[in-house]
Length: 156
Image 1 (cartoon, rainbow, N blue to C red):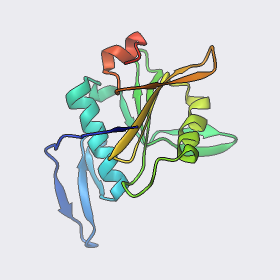
Image 2 (tube, one colour; image 1 turned 135 degrees about the vertical axis):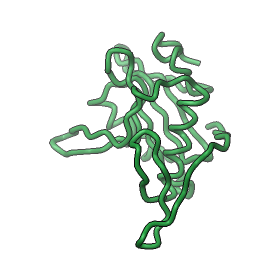
Image 3 (tube, one colour; image 1 turned 30 degrees about the vertical axis):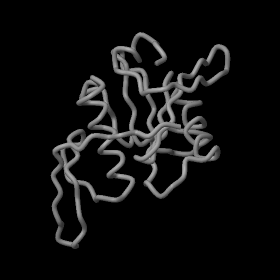
Image 4 (cartoon, rainbow, N blue to C red; image 1 turned 90 degrees about the vertical axis):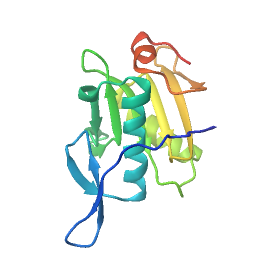
């Protein structure tokens, strides 16, 4: 486990007509309700874009996928140059502890997504893994790989 020191970013927040706070989502190009989980998701998306070189056009928020005949949504998926999943991100609100059961959730989603990198964060701490599907093992990483490292399959 490592503290994920997400740097501040230039965010836009407004209050909607129902008195809910909303944050501007650069990827979806619209305001979305600002929940604690959304705050984490927006920080992680910005961090991937601004600090780790992930291309905006290859990040997908709340992408749908099927698992065991159920429709599921991933928080954030970074795609590789040919559109295949590269990094699967699961965000939790800061008050949710990152437990083995929570880690199992993201690993389960990845059985159908097959992203070689997984990131699980609550905005305060994060776990990142490189998944070796051939050997059936997950290798814990010290840091989130940059886009170039992830495309090259380099575990940090």
